[in-house]
Image (cartoon, rainbow, N blue to C red; front, side, top):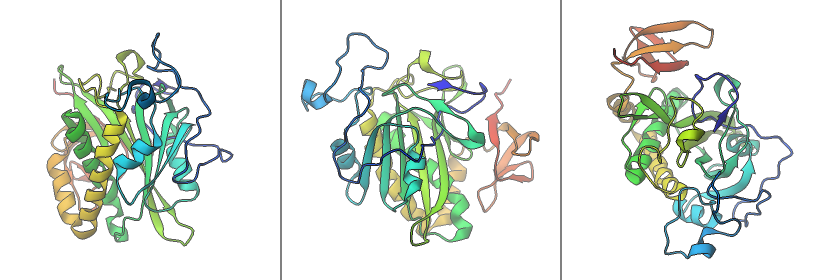
Length: 317
């Protein structure tokens, strides 16, 4: 993953796509316009074809193999319409062009990115699971701020279940892995955008990016990691098939018991109780103890509620 800006940027952010990019219809076969070379950056690996054709379906899919539409659709389960792009600059932008609830846009390789503060990234082919889910949350407007927290819980559930990696949550929706040296390293980022359907219904575009097979030499910053580096050899398809059902489950809970979802997040958020430094959108930098969350899911630093900002856990000395 190559970064294009400051070394303090997060490990995974979400991508912007030019409006001229063609979008395959849900359920259609994927045509790859960019050849795959796998493993990424490796020599002597197979090129072209599908993993199933090369080694047979009984062999587990390695983390670096190309994604396949049929496998992703089966992994997501009924009720979802999945599209797969071989190369794309943004799943979020594609999903937001004509948003339809219960659709998922996956990119095997994202080439350029836009995150908060217009941060941009590139991930090596086959190293990250990058996709966007369009949902109708079906929640009251005052509960929308809880949606990023709920999504973080779901992704953490899915990653823990499939990869068996002990991820922790950093407010509002980053997933971290604690290294043996005690450092918090980012393995997943999430970006949510509120859009409207053609009928004017508010929808959420949920961008999720998980560093699955990224190697140490490909890390953009010392604060990033991957599931592979954390010791898991799980495939991207397997992680996808664990995260999507977990997301559906947490959204159901948010619709019926938003207070319970918030309380669960409070108990699992590793930021609470930590010394933090927060860079606010207006340029102010705030340092203090994260004491909790308010009813809207805002982080309390001391007694001050923070609705947006880049949070850094201060490592104990």
